[in-house]
Image 1 (cartoon, rainbow, N blue to C red):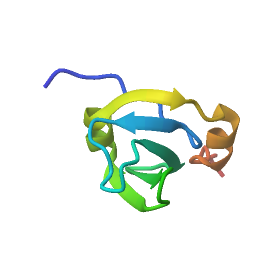
Image 2 (image 1 turned 180 degrees about the vertical axis):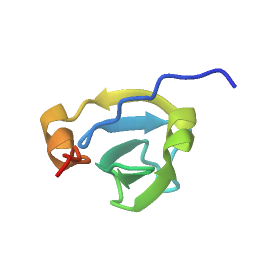
Image 3 (image 1 turned 30 degrees about the vertical axis):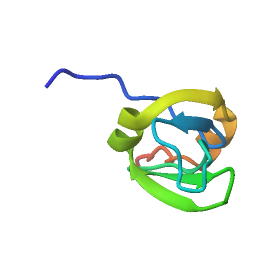
Length: 82
């Protein structure tokens, strides 16, 4: 496999995916980060979890970007030696 750079996804990002949601909405708010990415439909409010790879494959564009400081504040903390 060819190594791919990891797509930087931030909390608060609004993304557009390849297929529309059944409600007709096409914009999703990123509200959870990790191995799975939490997305909330901006039209109906439905919450779904997508694997990071699936999100990268389905992503068309970023409508707006979230704040990197917020993502860093809730992200994994550095482990310090005791």
